[in-house]
Length: 333
Length: 111
Ligand SMILES: Cc1cc2nc3c(=O)[nH]c(=O)nc-3n(C[C@H](O)[C@H](O)[C@H](O)COP(=O)(O)OP(=O)(O)OC[C@H]3O[C@@H](n4cnc5c(N)ncnc54)[C@H](O)[C@@H]3O)c2cc1C
Ligand code: FES
Image (cartoon, rainbow over the protein chains, first blue to last red):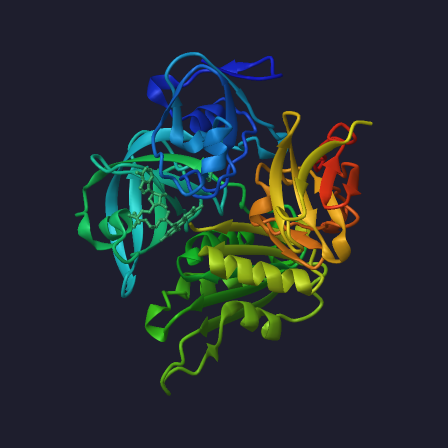
C-alpha cells in the first residue's frame, strides 16, 4: 500500500509492481518521462516505510538525492506500507492506464543496417495506445525494462509495431533488431508517455525525427492523415540520420501524406555522403532552420530522437521565438 | 523576517548555482554578474526536475528537462513567459550571503 502525503487516496502495488507503474495504473498523475531510470522526473521522497531499489546505479538519481531519502518511482518497489511525498499533476494523468501483458515477436522487417521494424502480437487484448506513446519491454532473464515507441496505429488486433535501432553493445536493442527468433515471448507494459498526437488541434504540424525517433513520428503523422481535418492540414516531416544507408522505408508515409492539404518531406543525412545522395545534408536542427517554411509561430511541433538531437532542435526552435506550448517531445535515453 | 547565513562568496562564484539546505528548506542560490545573488526554489515549476542540473547563460537559467527558461535576476519566466520562480529575500553582509527562507514559497505552473 502506498500513501501519498496530503492525498486522501492510497494505491496498491500488485505483485511487486514498480511504484510509478502502480500509480499510473491507479490513474494518478505521477510525474515521469522515460520510465526507465534515466531522466530523474519520477523522484519522490520516502517519508515512512521501506522500498527496494531495483537499480541503485540508475543515472536518474544522484548522491544528494540519496542523502535526502529520495528514490526513482520507476526503479523502486514498496516492501510494505509506505508514505511518500511527490507533487502529482492532473495534466499527467494517463489517458489510458498502462497494462502488463505477454507478447510474441511475430514479424521483423530489416529496414537498414542496424534498424528493424518489429511486429509484436499481444496475447490477450487489443493494442490500445495514443499515437506517439511507448511501451516498456522486458525479456525473461534480463534485468530492467526498455522503452520503445509504437510506429503503427492503435488497433483491436493486438499488433504493436516498433522501429528499433541496434545500439552498440546494447543488450535489448540487439535482441529485438536481429538476435531473438520470431516466436520469442516477452513482456510488454504500456502505454506510457505524454508526447502523443493532439489530433483535434488544427494548427500546422511539424514532425521532426532523428534516427530511431522515426517510429513515433510515423505513428503521429499516420494518425493525423486519418482525421477528417487532414485535407485542410499542413504537415512538414523532417527525418535525419547519419548516412544514406540508414534511411528507412518511407513509402507508407508518402502514401498516407496524400491526405494532407499541404505536405513537405525533408530527409537529411549528417555525414558527408558520396555523390549518389541527392537529398539534404546537415544536422537536423540546422535543416529545420533552413527548410521549414515561415511562419513558425502558429505550428505544433512533435520531436523524437536521441537526447542531444532533441535538445539541439528544441534550442533552435526556442531561439526562433517558438513557445513551449507549441512543443511536444520525447527523448530516447 | 529572519535572515539566516547560507554561505560565503567563496562557496558560490559568479556564474555558479548551488543548492543549500537552510532551516530544513532547500533553496537554490544563483550568483549572477555584478555580484547579484538570487535565492530561489530548487525544483522547476513545470515538473519534478532540479533547476541546478540545468544551465546558466547570463541571467537565463534553462532547465535540463524541457528547456524551460527563467530570468534568474527577476525570477520570471523567459519561455514560457506565464511562469515564475520563487524569490527568497537575500542580504549580503561583506562576503556572507543570508537568505530568508520563509519569505516566499515555490511556484508551480498551473494547467
Ligand atoms: C521514451 C523512450 C522511447 C524510446 N523509443 C525507442 C524507439 O522507438 N526505438 C528505439 O530504437 N529506441 C527507443 N528508445 C531507446 C531504448 O529504450 C533503449 O534505450 C535502447 O534501445 C538501448 O537499449 P539496450 O538494451 O540495447 O542498451 P543497454 O545499454 O543494454 O541498456 C540501456 C538501458 O537499459 C536500462 N537498464 C540497463 N540496466 C538496467 C538495470 N540494471 N535495471 C533497470 N534498467 C536497466 C536503462 O533504461 C538503460 O537506459 C526509447 C527510449 C525512451 C526513453
Ligand atoms: S521516469 Fe523514472 S527516471 Fe525517468
